[in-house]
Image 1 (cartoon, rainbow, N blue to C red):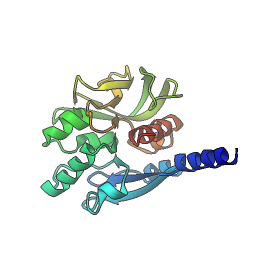
Image 2: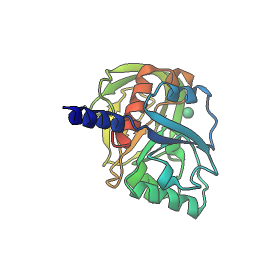
Image 3: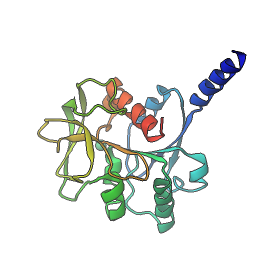
Amino acid sequence: MRLLSLLLLGGALWAQDPLRVRVVTGGHDHAPSFYTMFESMPGLNVAVEPHPRAFEGNLMKRVDVLVLYDMITTSTPEQRDRLRTFAESGKGIVILHHAICGYVDWPWWYENVAGGRYLPTSTYKHDVTIPVKIVEDHPVTSGVKDFSIFDETYKGMWISDKVKVLATTAEQTSDGPLVWISPFAKSRVVFIQLGHGSEAHRDPNYRQLVRQAIAWAGGR
Ligand SMILES: [Zn+2]
């Protein structure tokens, strides 16, 4: 009995081992409220690392999940190699909002990993009340009901027909898909188009989607 208790306690402690999350920024301005999101996420050990340091150091040993909120189009082959090694190792990646506008000259990235690309002809619209419809039952959307959010839409993007769409909108200034799972088989990759400003950052449904995306990408 005592051994069983110890085993259960050990299991509980193991389960509480925080996911090590590196939030990558740079190349696009954003509201400081973005960072407050992570204060509401227990069980995560979050550090912010802007470019050009984002992919320096021992990424593989120190990070379980990368959260990309950067918009970098020019990076060195070494930095891209590190990101590619990370992705191919089975680690988790969550791509938020304007991060889909990065690496537009890197087909391996947008075709396989991101599953989408913001094109020169794509458009955006700020300050839209967006009705969000959850279309797939998945750990990322678990417990999230359809909701509305005041945020920014993108339209005219290239979106891979291999992504698994989890949430959509009927808003005319959007392409429709708002949350998807990438076709990349070697690691878990989630894209969430939402997340421009403080209204989105403080939205409880948005926070829940981001938190669950990180957890799922990290294998929890
Ligand atoms: Zn934006």
